[in-house]
View 1 (spheres, one colour):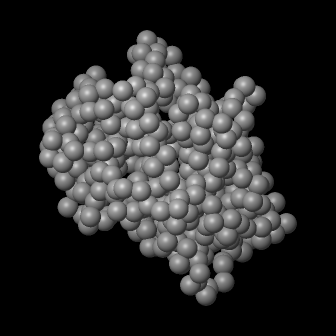
View 2 (tube, helix red, strand yellow):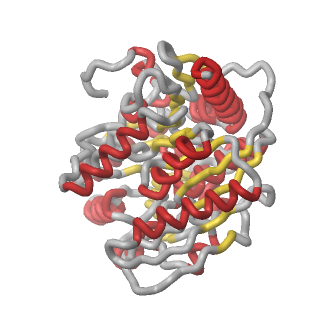
View 3 (cartoon, helix red, strand yellow):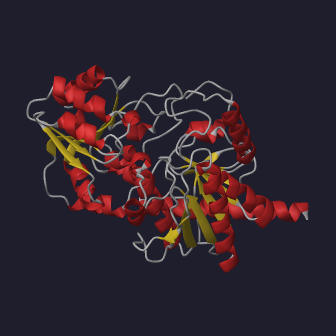
Length: 434
């Protein structure tokens, strides 16, 4: 954590903590409050989008899983949820992709709508913003929303959030996953356009009705009067059950799962293993992305490397449950906490020891199952894995702590309590103004 003067309440936030204007507490909900209709404006990428649009380069497997889990938990509390995604295509091309609704829903009760896309350079972002706003208006006319949740501060989400606050007069909650003001390695991006967008986002941070963030660093960006909730991840019931029912002894396996992009450090991981393989151990790699072909070629004929590629959720859970070590060799940020890998929570909940680069300080009971690397160079990765295996540090695990803090029941109660807190706060403010 940095040394800037910040609210002590936000500094102490842990687990699914609810932050008011003064202190952080666990959400305690005596009874469910009235249900609300929610527009979940996200970057969701379902199975049909992958078939219809070229999204491999910007695909985020972890974000998709997290959006599904949160939407399902909101629906399990009887809230009416619709997911709206701009279905972004980042590769510029003179081609129109029509809007459509996801036929293969992750939950039959939760519709998913994708905006149309026109990935022409300098027009792509504006088109997505206008089309997502148009779709939000259309769905609101069909059945009015009571609340909007935006996933991160991308341009389409910002445009829709401002419309919901100013024109529809309904509360907006920001689900803050990636620092909008620095890149993945914590470096500030310059330029007049970045400056303009940054000012727009800072203005919105002071106007949102609540914020759910993955790190205390991100929560410190919101004003003290805005309610906040720390939510690093969600442990699905499928993962918990697989861990409980598994009768198989964990194997000498090291697992990486995630999108194959440079910042995730997969190439460095393979290079580390190729230079210093560990006798009696295997390195398993799952996932997909723009580097998949190159990574598969790197892994060819390297003893002990098993390259799975993209696997189903069921297969991934089985692999996590069977591995003694799971690794997150993400690029190190000069601003720890600007991003947080959701898979760290899943790794810990699966009963694996987690090896990771720093992404902000974890709760102490979770750090018991974690070993940190100072950077993600091949040399550091190789040395760290050698130490963890030789000294049997992999025996230090924290599945119960992760499941207790971020299990579906805990998160479900906390989300419902947070929604109640936000909506009641907005209602009180309106009465005072009136």
